[in-house]
Every structure is written in structure tokens, then in C-alpha cells.
Length: 499
View 1 (tube, rainbow, N blue to C red):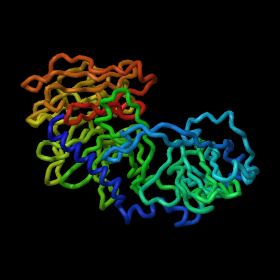
View 2: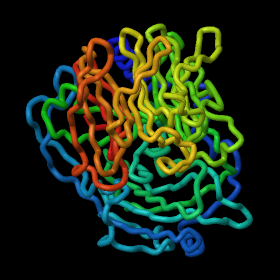
View 3: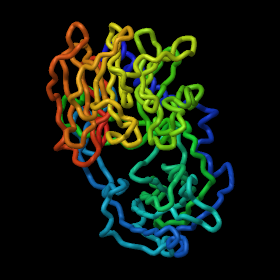
View 4: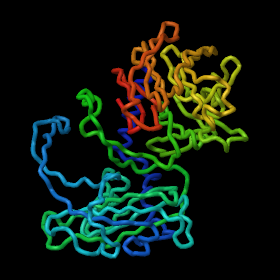
């Protein structure tokens, strides 16, 4: 990655951190999680009844939870848990994760949820609920609906949905403790699909904790509220979501802090690609190639459409799964450069709002569907061109080139650098621009290749930098990449971000 791009990456990460911490977007976001209180549900299912359980194919399971002693570390000067070893406490089991095995737990009937459970005094427990979205609730068709889960425990509760415990600064209720015997409301999903399976885990607490009670824990209510849905993506109040970090090398501690947090700021997209921070706009731009749109996200304005029909507007657009733009980046002058899937081209948005076509054909033949792109500091553009934006990929009749290429472009000249990879995807420079890295979307060769860069901008023979084929089974492969100023690569791949 060139130095300006690395700086933009740092700016973007810093800006996202600010967005997460400040919890801005007051007007647009204040009602994002208040839907149940704002209007009446179109349909409701009571999950404490046999009828409701049968309609949703719901099952309830139960287990007590225990407090156990465990090891930890004292806080360092920055508040991170890297200090001296100490002893503390934890809760077992950790039953919030979506694929937790509760098959040996007690199965309970929905009508038995009101039975007192736990051990009394200071005690904790888990209720796990699995259900499916029904096609109909009365006369209401649930297709595309927004669904909220509502529960009330005696005394306190935390609610996990599909392995996530969403939380935000200053939050009251929702997924976390709402109050004394108060209702917890959590979003199951927007634009849901009938038959969609959902896993909910409710962590129950007897209270008040500081004045151990003589009562027990039970479920007062549990229901699903269905609202007429909207397929429009929206910004949400920045809230923390679960992140699991597998540290295979101690060096990662210098990159990812011990107490790293991940925040969600928007949702409802079909597919997201090409995030780029535009400093002069104080905005994050990114593509949804499925929705044929470039979105803009800012602290003050929330989420908005920056450019529609971002990749295609042809008569056969219905045949495309991803007609829109993919990769986005800025040239050294700060102009947005766009890879357009459906139009088979790379374009640049000029300062006056006009669009310049940089690359569209190689030796008279249309490009496949340009994917990712990066600029070198001298203004040379490098991009990958697999066929993944075409309706039938490699078998699509619109595919005119007999290969998937890695190209460079400067001053109107398009060069083919290599066509050895089946699915060249992510592309990035090392900080000193001596190497060009290209990831390969190929289930049979999940690799990143490193190419030495010559002084004229062409590349020498590449070598495999990393091969994850054996570590990542299945049909998914490697996607986009970024690099930091120290040369560490951040690779989007199955399971998350690999460093």
C-alpha cells in the first residue's frame, strides 16, 4: 500500500473509533432501536404458549449457571489486562454463542416458563430458545418483515441473538439489563425470510444482587413482534458486538489490543465492498454491488446514497447478482476511482461531477468485472479483473477475455501484468511499494501472491506469500486486503479478518 493510502486507512480507523465512542447521529439514530415503542406490531406470537411454540417450531432449554474462580491480569497503565496475574470470577457455561450445544440441557414446555428456577439468593441461569420465522402469523405475511423479541424475567436479564450480545454506551435495556422486572426488547432482524432459524440465549439473574433475595428466577413473558419491513439499509446507534480474536503469534498484541472492541454503525445491506475514507468529506464511502449503490456514512448525516446505479443500468440488469460497483479508492489528487462490475470498466469521478472512463477494453475486448484497485504514489492505477460480477462467472457469454487479469493503467495506457491467477481479487502495495500483493479467490488455491515491482511499474515473477487452502476448508476463499505502515496485511477471508 502506498503511503497516502496507508494514511487514509489510519484516518478511517480513527474515524470509525470516534464514531463508535461518541455515539453520534442523534436525529437519524435515536429511533433506530425504538421501533416497538413507536408503533403497534402488525402481528405478535406468544412463545410461552403451545400455540405460539408450534407456529414457530420453538424449543426451550434450561440450565443453571455457576460462578467459578479463574485467572486474569491486572490493568496496565492504559487500562488493558496485561498487568500482573490476578484471580477473579467468571460465569459458566458461556451459553450465549449461537452454536452452543444445549442438547443435554433440560427441555421445558413453553407453559412451564413461569416455574421458579435457579438456586435462589445470588443465582444465575440460562434459557435457550430456538425457533423459525413462520410464513404467516394470522393474515400477516412475514416475508421482509422486521422482527423484535420481547421478554421479561424476574428479576434481570441479558439477551443474546444468534451469538451476539449487542451493547452501546449508555444503553438501558435492549440486550442488557433493563431494570427491575423490566422488559428487554431486541431486534431479531430486518427483512427476514420465512423459515429463517434464530437462536436466542437469555441470561437470568436473581436480584437485587447486593441484597440477596429469597425468591427465584422465572420468565414472565416472551413474544415476537412483527412489523411491516423495509428493505432500505439504515444507520443504527453505534453498539458493540462480539469479537473473538485468535492470537497465533504474540506479535499480534502490538497490532490488536487485548480489549479490542467492534462496533456496528449501519445494517441492512445485501453485500458490502470497497470501504474508503474520504477525509475532505469526513465520510466513509462503500459499495453494495448487489444493490447497485455506493453509500456514504458520516457522523452528522448518518447513512445516505452517494451514487445509485453505481455499476450498471442495462436492460438485462435483472440477470445480475452483483451489477454494482465493487472496489473504491482515491487517486493522489483525491478523486474517487470506481470499479464497475456490470459496465466492465474502471471510472474516475472528477471534481466537477463528471465521470471519466479510465479502462474498459484490453486489446479490443471488454474487461470482465473489475474488482479491487490501488494507486501507486506516482499515480499508476493497479486493479484486478476476475469475472465474479458477471451473472454466470466464468461461463458467462459476456466474458470476452479468456483469462482473469491483473492490470496497471497510467496516462491512458492499459497494461496486463499477469493472468496466472484464476480469481485475482484483493490488491495492495507494501508501504515502500517494492511489492504488490494479490489475493486469489479460488477454493482450490486460497493464496496471496507477492510480486516484486520494477521501476517501470511492471512486476517480476511472483511467489506465494501465504497459502490458507488447508486452513480454510469449503468453497469460500480470499477477498480484499489492506496493509498498514509497518507492512502487516489485513486479509478478508472466511472466519473474519486475518492478519
